[in-house]
Length: 191
Image 1 (cartoon, one colour):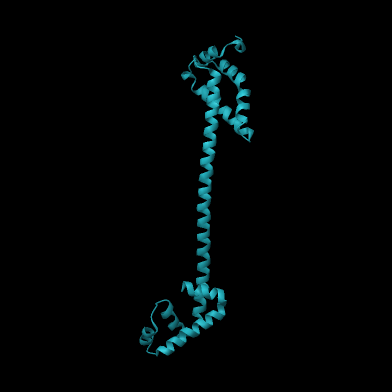
Image 2: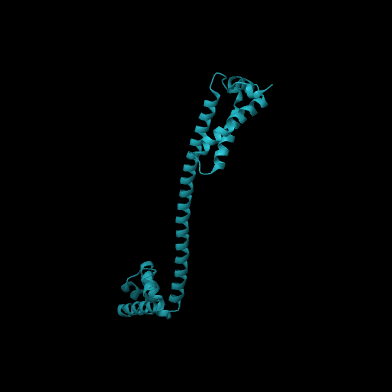
């Protein structure tokens, strides 16, 4: 049988019956023209090839549902059109998803980076506080960590309020010199 001389109508009936040669004829008849139609929509020619392969795969997998009365070329063009639209919608969704994931990753990276820096700074501050003279360190910790007033510290340690004020003032002077102004301001903000 010379499939090249058979009409689209008869080819559709043969394809419905599972005739692979009829399918091959339809592929040979429409592959190039459908490819050119799809390629106009894409910058990447491989995407157009993929679309055409999907269309012919769909044609074969749904061959039993084909209507011989329908226009085969119109059906194939419509399939290509819908596949192209679906491809662009998927790309759009994937782009949004990737952008969203990237923004989450960037936000988490910044947070992780900030936490690491904060921990390092806290360790440095703790080290410097521990190097203060014992009484000054005790007064300073009660003032900053326990957030006690000068009066409360004076009562607990049984020393004068002026002495407490002096210890805190001297501790801040020592820390300011050790940290420099920038780090000292950060220290005051966090502690």
